[in-house]
Image (cartoon, rainbow, N blue to C red; front, side, top):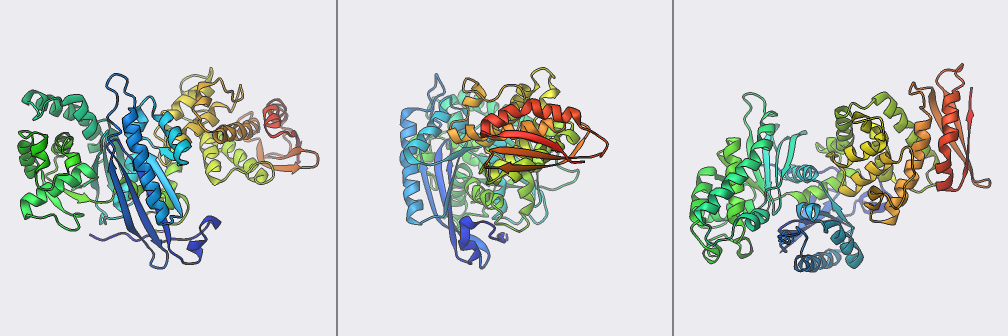
Amino acid sequence: MATSTYQLRANSQQFKKFAQGEDCTLAAIDIGTNSIHMVIVKIQPSLPAFEIIAREKDIVRLGHRDRHTGRLTDEAMERSLKALRRCQALANSFQVDSLVAVATSAMREAPNGRDFLQRIKTELNLDVDLISGQEEARRIYLGVLSAVDFNQQPHLLIDIGGGSTEISLVETHEARFLSSTKVGAVRLTQDFVSSDPITDREFITLQAYIRGRLERPIEELREYIKPGEAVKMIGTSGTIETLAEMLAMAELGSTPNPLHGYSFTLKNLDRLIKQMRKLDYEERSDLPGMSEKRAEIILAGAIILREAMDLLGVSEIMLCERALREGVIVDWMLSHGFIESRLSYQSSIRERSIMAIAKKYRVNMDCCQRTAKFSLQIFDQLQGVLHNWDTEAREMLWAAAILHNCGLYISHSAHHKHSYYLIRHAELLGFNETQVEIVANLARYHRKSKPKKKHTNYQNLIHKRQRQMVSELSAIMRLAVALDRRQIGAIAHVDSVYEPDQKHVTLKLIPTHSDDSCELELWSLQYKKAIFEEEFDVTVSATLLI
């Protein structure tokens, strides 16, 4: 196996160290259902490469939710806060230049998950990105790709977490299929196992449930495997690492160092499951290679892996020690423009994902691309003089402009509300949950009412700055929509000129055809400009340049 190398470039004043050829440290925290992990890496521009210099892991069982309400328990949240404080302290001791945190299944599904995210922000001043299941699968893919050379061959990836299992079909330059299914070692142990050792009845029920939940995504995945194509399987994260350690101890009498790259067979996994199902917690804890804290949930995790391998027709799996945490690091580097390598195609993941959703809902692309063009022209021309939103906000504005009319797929009536719903529940890869919420809200407010506190979708934006972004950028998009009122491309270009002394914005419009008076576009601007004027405290006029 070859280890991937990252080519780096500095394009941001925020990280002058890159430009000066100095090492830089980054940290990534993964708040999972079973545990909280952190990895700290050193970026070495002179090589160029990144090196893992520290890891932190704590079993917090955040997914041990209240059985009746599904809420995160006070005890689990306290354990998580303590673990996060330790992560912060370790990151501070390494003087990291940036710390990125993500949350997955447990936080996504709990009714009080977002409240806990806000509590983390308030008590620890730590921003945590809530990511979807498919986005989790994508970042796991990036993490694996940073450690394994696929040799231009397709690979199956499986990551068994506490609350969900991600199964993907990937190759060097493409993730062909990404999936996330709500079967996880903590979730299933809590829901299906009440005896110790497990009874035959519970074992059969658990096995049948897992197989039933995995059948559909695996069936869909199979459609992406070409006839006669050989695929290899890679497993990541704690459950599969523990199983690999146990099987290595049984086979070799010791644990390989590193464990990365160790392979084991479905046949040997079957033997281990048969052994473990007869043992109670204490006896499982005593098995060589077993972690005491994982002994409670290991059987459910092993059955998930066993059923997945069987359904996929795979007889052997290789362990990769890199997963979501490292994928978060790679994704951060990609999004900030620090990587120029065979991974660089991933930087277009947002665009490709948005275009796929637009195609799915039969969006009028000519119209929406004009709306996006005008939105970005106004954004760029007024940046630094009327607003100070960054490149990240610009990308979300573009995404919303492309998808703002997707609600027409459902109905013309209130289609802006339908657009919000479709975007909010789409799998927009490359965006975290908060960013998806912002994009959906931007589309929601491209017409009709301006954002109001009483609107539930607007309330979903926790921070004042997020609500301000939606209010200001949606006002910009309203002007862009007006500029294409007839949806025939009557306006070719817009120049926005701000006169601070008069607090006035002039929109200088260049028509596509010199003999077109663009009366309907000018009328539409006059009608729609009020919200923009109110939001930015300016007046707006338009001039047609013929």
